[in-house]
Image (tube, one colour):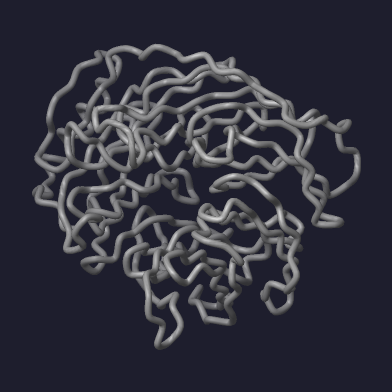
Length: 428
């Protein structure tokens, strides 16, 4: 939805000055539609217990064996954050342990693979609007597959749904889908401590706005925070505002930690609902899912700017029913892009990538064999695609044809409550 603030050079300068003053810990509104907030204190840390649900096997020594972390929604059949041992030689997954924590629906692993960070997506659909979500830190032993709770901090917003690490590993960013007390989504920035724990948020940036889709675009809704391939910029996908906001990342503080770029944002068609963004390995192209329109867009990337090249529908011609574009990932060799589409479609849509111009061509579809496929992962060997069906308490491991890009039938099934996110880590 279009944001109602005014872009100007004076605003950009003011934003940078305020961001640079983080250490002085104060709060000042910058303009209608974008507010920088500095957290004054860490909220109380809630202790959690790490429980192992099955007997762990010895550390994997076989080549091609990974630890697979699975984030879930709790309250039904799930207890929290799961660790499986995944064998790329066979496609088999063996459950190792579970760390009990609330709604760890999105995960990120530290650059050194020693720590795992998970959102605590609260209040959710049934919680009080005044409740803020959280972000939890865990120590991770990749050899044994065990997680140990370290601490939890406030996300400074409702329903945190995405995490990303700064390229230098100094900060963790949380995309907060909504903020009940101050309508509009936000993203928060947390310093990472030497022992893996999270510090309280040092910066929170709010968006405002509205869009045409009632119930989904009544306010701004930040859905993901993605750094550019060169590490100099941050792109923030706002589903409610129909915009991709762009910020310059300057960790030396010379221009503030995060400040708006000259262009400020990329505008998408009304009702698009931008959700997730990924970049090609060479850094030349970006791919975006538009949840509400059920489309995928291709952009050319250069020096902090996105130029739209193409937008394709995810649904088949003549499809009738609800849709909901979700995650997208490139194959390890970059030749194919995979996108999950929920609603009544419940499928993985497969596109070939043209190496000469980055544009996409539809090559196939594969039912997720369940309800509401959210996130998925392609293993580093490129042999397998693992997708979780949040609404049917299962995940499927599809063998992937690396030549055609298609997913082969008769996948392996994993029973797991409300699976959402997947991360693979090589045991060390």
